[in-house]
Length: 242
Image (tube, rainbow, N blue to C red):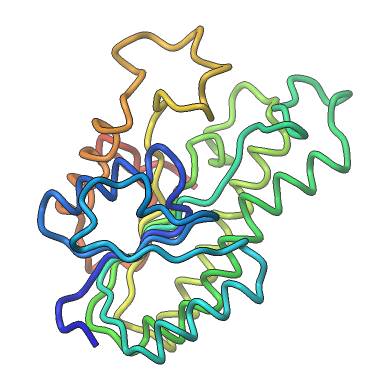
């Protein structure tokens, strides 16, 4: 068992996740990275990095958490980067006529169900730790009260569902894992494959490199009031309405 708490980064294959891992490693943090392929192959500094592979099925998630529990792994930060805006079968819907069952199910699977499964099994690991901050990437468009443009049905709805799920999870963890607090996080528009098709209307100063976005994420975390059970904040540390 390592006595120095590590950061557990889930969904570590994304550009923002990898930039966050590099930033953590630069500051001397040990990292356990979970992705579909061994992320250690793409991270230069491997001295404090452990790579784990998951297909994000519940069986795989349960097996990984069981292994960390058995090894008595010490963790004080968790990042869940899982999510999707578009891929070969998902495109954000501009009009209701574009909504399909397949797209909705795929959006909810990636943006809501997979994080929920991680949260379900993480409780076994985290309740045995010291103070832990659990950060989950959401999106401002998941704010119901902030929705003024409509559209993007599957993405908006699945992120709004994620936000509600996290509210409930935080309440349950408070009963069974009081040491865990939650940050629901909007990173802004980051120059990654996820945002590439939608960057045309984004001003250059509001389009962030993954490295900049990672630094802002860790700055927000460092400045966070850990006495609050759950917070929904953006890259500048501002609160977002639920």
